[in-house]
Amino acid sequence: MTVRKAWIVGIALCGAGLSFVLLLVVGVYMTAGSLAGGAAGGPKALAKGSVPAAYSPLVQKWGNLCSAINPALLAAQLYQESGFNPKAQSPAAAQGIAQFIPGTWATHGIDGDGDGKRDVWDPDDAIPSAAKYDCTLAEYVKDAPGNPTHNMLAAYNAGAYAVIKYGGVPPYKETQNYVKTITELEKSFAAPVTRVDPSKQAAGAIAYAQGKLGTPYLWGGTGTAGQGGRFDCSGLTQAAYESVGITLPRVANDQYNAGPHPKRDELLPGDLVFFSDDLTNSRAIRHVGIYVGGGYMIDAPRPGAVIRFDPIDTPDYFGATRVTEDGAKALPSTI
Image 1 (tube, rainbow, N blue to C red):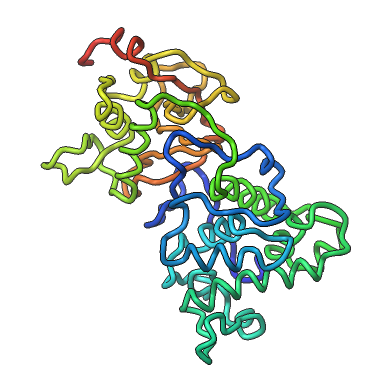
Image 2 (tube, helix red, strand yellow):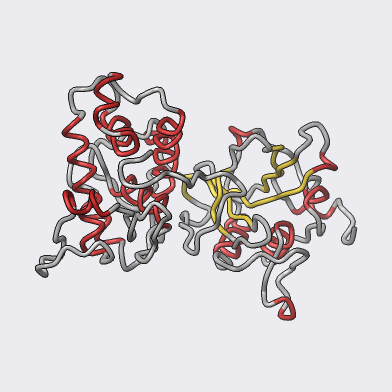
Protein backbone atom coordinates (compact mmCIF):
# COMPACT_ATOMS: atom_id res chain seq x y z
CA MET A 1 0.00 0.00 0.00
CA THR A 2 1.49 3.34 -0.98
CA VAL A 3 1.58 6.23 1.46
CA ARG A 4 -0.72 8.39 -0.70
CA LYS A 5 -2.84 5.85 -2.54
CA ALA A 6 -3.25 2.20 -3.39
CA TRP A 7 -0.75 1.79 -6.18
CA ILE A 8 -2.66 0.15 -8.98
CA VAL A 9 -1.24 1.52 -12.19
CA GLY A 10 1.80 -0.21 -13.68
CA ILE A 11 2.99 0.63 -17.13
CA ALA A 12 2.24 -2.68 -18.77
CA LEU A 13 1.85 -2.66 -22.53
CA CYS A 14 -1.89 -3.15 -22.39
CA GLY A 15 -2.51 -1.19 -19.17
CA ALA A 16 -5.21 1.42 -18.74
CA GLY A 17 -4.86 4.40 -21.08
CA LEU A 18 -4.53 8.01 -19.98
CA SER A 19 -5.82 10.99 -21.87
CA PHE A 20 -2.48 12.76 -21.89
CA VAL A 21 0.66 10.97 -23.00
CA LEU A 22 4.06 12.50 -22.80
CA LEU A 23 6.10 13.40 -25.86
CA LEU A 24 9.72 12.78 -26.67
CA VAL A 25 11.81 15.11 -28.76
CA VAL A 26 11.02 14.10 -32.31
CA GLY A 27 13.40 11.56 -33.71
CA VAL A 28 16.71 13.37 -33.31
CA TYR A 29 17.50 13.25 -29.60
CA MET A 30 17.69 10.68 -26.84
CA THR A 31 18.11 10.90 -23.09
CA ALA A 32 21.65 10.92 -21.80
CA GLY A 33 23.17 7.68 -20.60
CA SER A 34 23.91 9.40 -17.29
CA LEU A 35 20.25 8.96 -16.41
CA ALA A 36 20.45 5.18 -16.67
CA GLY A 37 20.78 4.79 -12.91
CA GLY A 38 17.73 6.96 -12.26
CA ALA A 39 19.46 9.20 -9.74
CA ALA A 40 18.54 12.83 -9.45
CA GLY A 41 21.74 14.66 -8.68
CA GLY A 42 21.18 18.27 -9.66
CA PRO A 43 19.12 20.45 -11.97
CA LYS A 44 17.80 18.84 -15.12
CA ALA A 45 15.59 20.56 -17.66
CA LEU A 46 12.42 18.98 -18.97
CA ALA A 47 12.30 17.61 -22.49
CA LYS A 48 10.38 19.89 -24.84
CA GLY A 49 6.68 19.04 -24.84
CA SER A 50 7.00 16.31 -22.22
CA VAL A 51 4.74 18.07 -19.70
CA PRO A 52 1.53 19.99 -20.50
CA ALA A 53 2.42 23.64 -21.01
CA ALA A 54 0.23 24.79 -18.11
CA TYR A 55 2.29 22.76 -15.63
CA SER A 56 5.78 22.79 -17.13
CA PRO A 57 7.02 25.94 -15.29
CA LEU A 58 5.79 24.55 -11.97
CA VAL A 59 7.46 21.20 -12.53
CA GLN A 60 10.71 22.83 -13.63
CA LYS A 61 10.75 25.17 -10.62
CA TRP A 62 9.68 22.81 -7.87
CA GLY A 63 11.53 19.83 -9.31
CA ASN A 64 14.74 21.47 -8.12
CA LEU A 65 13.57 21.89 -4.52
CA CYS A 66 16.11 19.40 -3.12
CA SER A 67 18.90 17.16 -4.35
CA ALA A 68 16.82 13.96 -4.19
CA ILE A 69 14.50 15.07 -6.98
CA ASN A 70 14.68 16.83 -10.32
CA PRO A 71 12.05 18.14 -12.74
CA ALA A 72 12.10 14.97 -14.86
CA LEU A 73 11.58 12.77 -11.80
CA LEU A 74 8.75 14.95 -10.51
CA ALA A 75 7.13 14.88 -13.95
CA ALA A 76 7.40 11.08 -14.02
CA GLN A 77 5.62 10.84 -10.67
CA LEU A 78 2.80 13.15 -11.74
CA TYR A 79 2.37 11.22 -14.97
CA GLN A 80 2.31 7.89 -13.15
CA GLU A 81 -0.10 9.15 -10.51
CA SER A 82 -2.67 10.96 -12.64
CA GLY A 83 -1.55 11.39 -16.23
CA PHE A 84 -1.38 15.13 -15.41
CA ASN A 85 -5.13 15.16 -14.75
CA PRO A 86 -5.90 17.73 -12.01
CA LYS A 87 -9.37 16.21 -11.53
CA ALA A 88 -8.16 12.63 -11.07
CA GLN A 89 -9.65 10.66 -8.17
CA SER A 90 -8.83 7.06 -7.32
CA PRO A 91 -10.91 4.38 -5.56
CA ALA A 92 -8.54 4.86 -2.60
CA ALA A 93 -9.69 8.52 -2.30
CA ALA A 94 -6.45 9.91 -3.73
CA GLN A 95 -7.16 13.32 -5.22
CA GLY A 96 -5.82 15.68 -7.84
CA ILE A 97 -2.85 15.80 -10.15
CA ALA A 98 -0.51 14.49 -7.43
CA GLN A 99 -3.00 12.00 -5.95
CA PHE A 100 -2.79 12.94 -2.29
CA ILE A 101 -5.05 11.10 0.11
CA PRO A 102 -6.80 13.52 2.50
CA GLY A 103 -4.74 12.62 5.57
CA THR A 104 -1.42 13.13 3.78
CA TRP A 105 -2.64 16.35 2.22
CA ALA A 106 -3.67 17.68 5.65
CA THR A 107 -0.11 17.16 6.87
CA HIS A 108 1.98 17.89 3.80
CA GLY A 109 -0.12 20.09 1.50
CA ILE A 110 1.22 23.62 1.06
CA ASP A 111 -0.08 26.89 -0.37
CA GLY A 112 2.14 26.82 -3.42
CA ASP A 113 0.75 29.91 -5.13
CA GLY A 114 0.41 32.02 -2.00
CA ASP A 115 -3.31 32.73 -2.42
CA GLY A 116 -4.11 31.81 1.17
CA LYS A 117 -5.61 28.41 0.34
CA ARG A 118 -4.27 24.86 0.21
CA ASP A 119 -6.31 23.21 -2.53
CA VAL A 120 -5.52 19.60 -3.47
CA TRP A 121 -7.38 20.09 -6.76
CA ASP A 122 -5.29 23.11 -7.75
CA PRO A 123 -2.03 22.13 -9.53
CA ASP A 124 -0.50 25.41 -8.33
CA ASP A 125 -0.70 23.93 -4.83
CA ALA A 126 -0.56 20.21 -5.52
CA ILE A 127 2.62 20.18 -7.65
CA PRO A 128 4.67 22.19 -5.11
CA SER A 129 3.23 19.98 -2.37
CA ALA A 130 4.31 16.83 -4.22
CA ALA A 131 7.87 18.19 -4.49
CA LYS A 132 7.88 19.26 -0.84
CA TYR A 133 6.59 15.85 0.24
CA ASP A 134 9.30 14.09 -1.77
CA CYS A 135 11.95 16.22 -0.13
CA THR A 136 10.48 15.56 3.32
CA LEU A 137 10.63 11.83 2.68
CA ALA A 138 14.19 12.16 1.42
CA GLU A 139 15.12 13.86 4.67
CA TYR A 140 13.46 11.07 6.69
CA VAL A 141 15.57 8.40 4.98
CA LYS A 142 18.77 10.37 4.36
CA ASP A 143 20.86 8.05 6.54
CA ALA A 144 19.72 4.85 4.82
CA PRO A 145 22.38 3.21 2.62
CA GLY A 146 21.97 3.25 -1.14
CA ASN A 147 20.71 5.68 -3.74
CA PRO A 148 18.97 8.63 -2.00
CA THR A 149 16.46 9.09 -4.81
CA HIS A 150 15.56 5.41 -4.89
CA ASN A 151 15.16 5.46 -1.11
CA MET A 152 12.91 8.51 -1.33
CA LEU A 153 10.71 6.81 -3.93
CA ALA A 154 10.57 3.66 -1.82
CA ALA A 155 9.55 5.74 1.19
CA TYR A 156 6.83 7.35 -0.91
CA ASN A 157 5.48 3.91 -1.79
CA ALA A 158 6.10 1.84 1.34
CA GLY A 159 6.76 4.40 4.07
CA ALA A 160 9.98 5.76 5.51
CA TYR A 161 10.02 3.18 8.29
CA ALA A 162 10.34 0.33 5.79
CA VAL A 163 13.31 2.00 4.11
CA ILE A 164 15.03 2.56 7.44
CA LYS A 165 14.23 -0.96 8.61
CA TYR A 166 15.70 -2.63 5.54
CA GLY A 167 18.53 -0.19 4.98
CA GLY A 168 17.33 0.94 1.55
CA VAL A 169 14.61 -0.09 -0.87
CA PRO A 170 12.66 -2.80 0.99
CA PRO A 171 12.14 -6.27 -0.51
CA TYR A 172 8.56 -5.60 -1.51
CA LYS A 173 7.81 -6.36 -5.14
CA GLU A 174 5.34 -3.49 -5.43
CA THR A 175 7.83 -0.99 -4.03
CA GLN A 176 10.70 -2.26 -6.17
CA ASN A 177 8.49 -2.03 -9.27
CA TYR A 178 7.43 1.49 -8.30
CA VAL A 179 11.03 2.68 -7.97
CA LYS A 180 11.92 1.07 -11.31
CA THR A 181 8.88 2.52 -13.05
CA ILE A 182 9.49 6.10 -11.94
CA THR A 183 13.22 6.05 -12.65
CA GLU A 184 12.60 4.61 -16.12
CA LEU A 185 9.94 7.23 -16.87
CA GLU A 186 12.29 9.94 -15.60
CA LYS A 187 14.61 9.28 -18.54
CA SER A 188 11.96 10.20 -21.05
CA PHE A 189 10.98 13.44 -19.33
CA ALA A 190 14.55 14.75 -19.11
CA ALA A 191 15.91 17.17 -21.68
CA PRO A 192 18.31 15.27 -23.91
CA VAL A 193 22.00 15.93 -23.75
CA THR A 194 23.20 13.48 -26.37
CA ARG A 195 22.31 13.20 -30.00
CA VAL A 196 21.47 10.34 -32.31
CA ASP A 197 21.07 10.55 -36.04
CA PRO A 198 17.98 8.77 -37.32
CA SER A 199 16.87 9.43 -40.84
CA LYS A 200 14.68 12.38 -41.73
CA GLN A 201 12.03 9.86 -42.77
CA ALA A 202 12.09 8.22 -39.32
CA ALA A 203 11.79 11.62 -37.65
CA GLY A 204 8.87 12.50 -39.92
CA ALA A 205 7.11 9.22 -39.11
CA ILE A 206 7.50 9.89 -35.38
CA ALA A 207 6.17 13.43 -35.84
CA TYR A 208 3.11 12.03 -37.62
CA ALA A 209 2.45 9.50 -34.84
CA GLN A 210 2.89 12.17 -32.16
CA GLY A 211 0.22 14.21 -33.90
CA LYS A 212 -2.20 11.32 -33.33
CA LEU A 213 -1.60 10.95 -29.60
CA GLY A 214 -4.88 10.67 -27.72
CA THR A 215 -6.81 9.38 -30.76
CA PRO A 216 -9.09 6.44 -29.85
CA TYR A 217 -8.14 3.01 -31.15
CA LEU A 218 -10.22 1.42 -33.91
CA TRP A 219 -9.81 -2.21 -34.97
CA GLY A 220 -9.02 -2.15 -38.68
CA GLY A 221 -8.54 1.62 -38.59
CA THR A 222 -6.29 3.24 -41.15
CA GLY A 223 -7.08 6.86 -40.31
CA THR A 224 -9.64 7.57 -43.02
CA ALA A 225 -12.24 10.29 -42.63
CA GLY A 226 -14.96 7.65 -42.59
CA GLN A 227 -13.25 6.05 -39.60
CA GLY A 228 -13.00 9.34 -37.77
CA GLY A 229 -9.24 9.45 -38.26
CA ARG A 230 -8.75 6.43 -36.00
CA PHE A 231 -6.20 3.63 -36.26
CA ASP A 232 -5.26 0.20 -35.09
CA CYS A 233 -1.61 -0.55 -34.35
CA SER A 234 -0.41 -1.40 -37.85
CA GLY A 235 -2.71 1.19 -39.42
CA LEU A 236 -0.87 3.86 -37.41
CA THR A 237 2.61 2.66 -38.37
CA GLN A 238 1.57 2.30 -42.01
CA ALA A 239 0.14 5.83 -42.11
CA ALA A 240 3.13 7.30 -40.29
CA TYR A 241 5.57 5.97 -42.85
CA GLU A 242 3.22 6.70 -45.75
CA SER A 243 3.44 10.35 -44.64
CA VAL A 244 7.16 10.30 -45.49
CA GLY A 245 6.88 8.38 -48.72
CA ILE A 246 7.43 4.78 -47.53
CA THR A 247 4.75 2.22 -48.28
CA LEU A 248 4.36 -0.55 -45.72
CA PRO A 249 2.14 -3.64 -45.77
CA ARG A 250 -1.10 -3.40 -43.86
CA VAL A 251 -0.61 -5.89 -41.01
CA ALA A 252 2.01 -6.09 -38.28
CA ASN A 253 3.54 -9.47 -39.09
CA ASP A 254 4.11 -8.38 -42.69
CA GLN A 255 5.56 -5.05 -41.58
CA TYR A 256 8.18 -7.02 -39.66
CA ASN A 257 9.72 -7.97 -43.01
CA ALA A 258 10.05 -4.37 -44.22
CA GLY A 259 13.76 -4.09 -43.46
CA PRO A 260 16.67 -5.38 -41.37
CA HIS A 261 16.19 -6.31 -37.73
CA PRO A 262 18.29 -4.35 -35.21
CA LYS A 263 18.99 -5.84 -31.81
CA ARG A 264 17.46 -4.27 -28.72
CA ASP A 265 20.62 -2.30 -27.94
CA GLU A 266 20.84 -1.09 -31.55
CA LEU A 267 17.40 0.52 -31.71
CA LEU A 268 17.03 4.02 -33.11
CA PRO A 269 13.99 6.30 -33.06
CA GLY A 270 11.73 5.37 -35.94
CA ASP A 271 12.36 1.63 -35.80
CA LEU A 272 9.23 -0.49 -35.73
CA VAL A 273 8.96 -2.68 -32.62
CA PHE A 274 6.89 -5.86 -32.52
CA PHE A 275 5.20 -8.04 -29.93
CA SER A 276 4.00 -11.64 -30.02
CA ASP A 277 2.74 -14.46 -27.81
CA ASP A 278 5.05 -16.82 -29.71
CA LEU A 279 8.59 -15.45 -29.70
CA THR A 280 9.74 -18.07 -32.21
CA ASN A 281 7.31 -17.20 -35.00
CA SER A 282 7.12 -13.88 -36.82
CA ARG A 283 3.77 -14.89 -38.32
CA ALA A 284 2.33 -14.79 -34.78
CA ILE A 285 3.19 -11.10 -34.29
CA ARG A 286 0.08 -9.30 -33.05
CA HIS A 287 1.23 -5.75 -32.23
CA VAL A 288 3.53 -3.04 -33.54
CA GLY A 289 4.60 0.44 -32.46
CA ILE A 290 7.10 3.13 -33.46
CA TYR A 291 10.16 3.36 -31.22
CA VAL A 292 10.86 6.88 -29.96
CA GLY A 293 13.87 6.35 -27.69
CA GLY A 294 14.41 5.82 -23.98
CA GLY A 295 12.73 2.40 -24.05
CA TYR A 296 9.35 3.73 -25.23
CA MET A 297 7.18 3.67 -28.33
CA ILE A 298 4.08 5.38 -29.67
CA ASP A 299 1.38 2.81 -30.40
CA ALA A 300 -2.33 2.20 -30.76
CA PRO A 301 -2.63 -0.46 -28.05
CA ARG A 302 -6.10 -2.00 -28.09
CA PRO A 303 -9.87 -1.35 -28.23
CA GLY A 304 -10.90 1.09 -25.52
CA ALA A 305 -7.47 2.74 -25.39
CA VAL A 306 -5.98 5.72 -27.19
CA ILE A 307 -2.79 6.20 -29.16
CA ARG A 308 -0.23 6.74 -26.47
CA PHE A 309 3.29 6.30 -25.16
CA ASP A 310 4.17 2.77 -23.90
CA PRO A 311 7.30 0.89 -22.77
CA ILE A 312 8.72 -1.74 -25.11
CA ASP A 313 10.54 -3.94 -22.61
CA THR A 314 7.74 -6.39 -21.88
CA PRO A 315 7.81 -10.22 -21.91
CA ASP A 316 6.11 -10.33 -25.33
CA TYR A 317 8.69 -8.11 -27.07
CA PHE A 318 9.55 -9.93 -30.30
CA GLY A 319 12.01 -7.70 -32.10
CA ALA A 320 12.36 -4.69 -34.37
CA THR A 321 12.63 -3.62 -37.97
CA ARG A 322 14.52 -0.65 -39.33
CA VAL A 323 12.29 0.57 -42.12
CA THR A 324 14.25 1.49 -45.20
CA GLU A 325 13.10 2.43 -48.66
CA ASP A 326 14.78 -0.67 -50.09
CA GLY A 327 13.26 -2.90 -47.43
CA ALA A 328 9.78 -1.53 -47.95
CA LYS A 329 9.97 -1.67 -51.76
CA ALA A 330 11.02 -5.32 -51.61
CA LEU A 331 7.58 -6.22 -50.29
CA PRO A 332 4.34 -6.48 -52.23
CA SER A 333 2.34 -3.25 -52.08
CA THR A 334 -0.78 -5.17 -51.09
CA ILE A 335 -1.06 -8.20 -48.84
